[in-house]
Length: 463
Image (tube, rainbow, N blue to C red; front, top):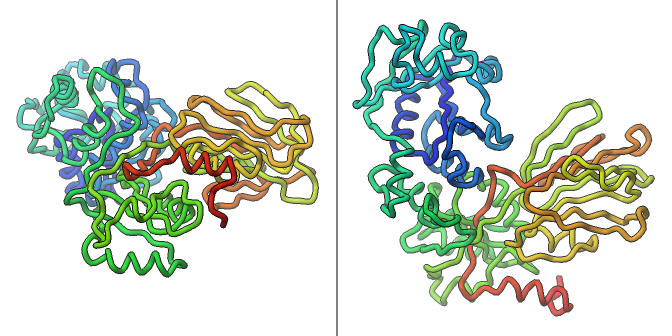
């Protein structure tokens, strides 16, 4: 049976000592699952930065390690699952081990260790769980303090997130304690400082490696890709260059967002609201401009519940919706933050959209187009018959929407998320994701507001 090690923690931020621990665990176990914990009242610095940024840092901190993966389910739910419950959750995947730092075991022989006294159901966890004990050079370890089932893993590097936060709050770079990608992300958005994190920042592409994604149906995009591939294409990128239209960008985001690198769009499509124009990015010699502006944009977390009770959780950057699957209108109940706001919407369907997606289907349904970095999102009705006159509502970033089929036996629904179709849908729930976001990079010459203005005044170029 394969041995799986669960490596939990706040990772706030993830330091090189965390990465070193994961690397050593991967030498001992067949798989290592890194689980950044959700809200813990015993961690006063839990909200030092927003959860969505902590998720990005964790992905960067443990990226490109063999046999190491990151699971954000705790952060997405904003709870901290106990180790005993984690043992139940992952028990079907193999022989489970729980990584724990050696200093958390001090006093174990007397029943006074942190595991025994502070963990949920600590005494039982001590007796029944298997522990991978992480020992760094500065940690003492008395064998008499070890739990009944253990294996010691030597980690050659010491450190703590608290020390790193202190260094960063002091205005220093923490260069010796952080992976370069983590450090660059922290610097880009001014994290762990006295001020709020930036929502947009500058990006220097000098010397950066690019992954190139092109529209396979667009000859001009493929020709530019072939010219660039020899000098810039890389499987270990610092950014993703997307050649095509908004559809190509959405596909690139779906397949690559977890890389946690900026996306740079070059418009070979029509409207290209998410894209730059060629003259904004390139000179005549195919040299990419080195200075760009990055906007950090949210994704939506969507849960589709089918009539048989099964659920599917998805992430999307643009929009998601439910719609009638027969010739009859849909009868839908719309709730906001647990409160029913529209008891019966008679319509073709209801869509939720990010600001970045507001220029797509949401616009055609009558919603106003928004600048991509507007701190709001939309819920929109399609061909609404009742209530008369209702079309759309703009929502704050912390809103939670639920759409329920009010007549599931007679009026069937389909659901759509990121091109995935779900049949026989009972409900769709949506909110801004707590873990997933996308960085879009634009030239300093790019005028996003102008495209929105042209669209509203009918001067945008035709499809």
